[in-house]
Figure: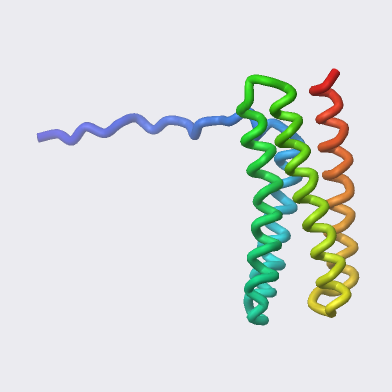
Length: 129
């Protein structure tokens, strides 16, 4: 008896994947996750988990908002993503003050946060127009 297999199909494509802000948020979330892994190694589990959660909130809220059929609703999700970005920036500064992360690493991540924050703000403004 011959086995029937379903043809391979391309991976589904989601609207948010085309958004530069989601792409940048994804890169930043990966960087923050890697930093969280380093914090885990130092048994700073609570700090690591908080950093991971806020980093994932960036990509998740942009993605979730992009699924909305209303611009206003999408803008609300972008606002939440932007606030999570500020949470990440604050944690990075505190971690630097505690000597948990180097100043150079924090500077690099804060530049990413700042650029992404500006891009989210600008994108949100285009939705409101």
